[in-house]
Amino acid sequence: MPNHDPKLNASSLTLHDGLEIAYLRQHEASRSDAIRVLCTHGWLDNANSYVPMMPYLPDMDLVAIDLPGHGHSSHQTGHYSALDAAVQCLDVATALGWETFHVIGHSLGGSLALMMAVAAPNRVLSTTSIESAGPLSGEPIKFAERLQKAADDRAHPKRFLSRTFKTRDEAIESRLKAAKMQRVSAELIIRRQLIETDTGFIWRFDPSLRNASLAYHDEAHIEEGLAAIQCPTHVVVASDGYIKNRDETASRLGRISNLEITELPGFHHLHMDTPEPVAAAINRFLGTQPALGG
Image (cartoon, rainbow, N blue to C red):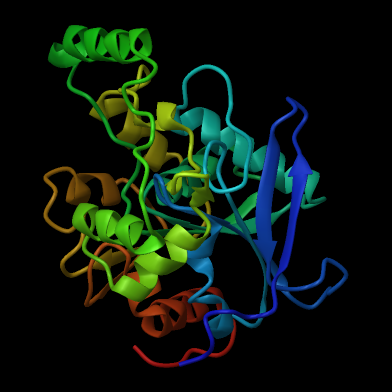
């Protein structure tokens, strides 16, 4: 297996609203023969989510960002929403000087990738969504309950402040309790997600990311959005992951006209745990090299 620490260009850019977005880039910006790919990670993950796959995606000028509030990117004022984040990701591509590009997203990042294709059909050339069939939806009957929960979370801003971990290993164990993934994958995420203090380690991500959302849409909105996607779309499904057995997955994917589905063994973070077959599926989809394994 290739080294999980390839030579990466770590940098940042500033969006027009002042948000600082950190990212890892696989190639020099001057390289003209590599296709441009923006990578978006899952909720409470960060750009390191894509490090394991990078050695298997050599034909790509791959930029993996820390979403706002995650990793080394700025925390934002106000609430976070998937649709706002999708538009912010388009702003990132603009700041990179990319008029057109491909998108790869995992989990929340997969939802953002799909919504980017809806929002900018003339810019997004293809979308690969790993373990996501679109944003979370909410039943209208639960609107009042969700609004009350969101208001209560915002009234208690200290509710989700990070606990202090005595060691990095303690933080890794906490992450492993929250998600099925290999320890090496958890370690890679944690490497970019901790701040060391005088008393130990705390989470780097914005604690308000844990607040209940004000911005759920009903299922009809999501399906209409997916039906509007024009570019080739690739959805990678883990055999023991998040979306395979969800009630809405088949209906949602049925709304995407130009769709390829790849199912692979693994858990929700299969792109980190077993990066080679996931990368091989992406290379086959995009016609890039090498299409190894899987």
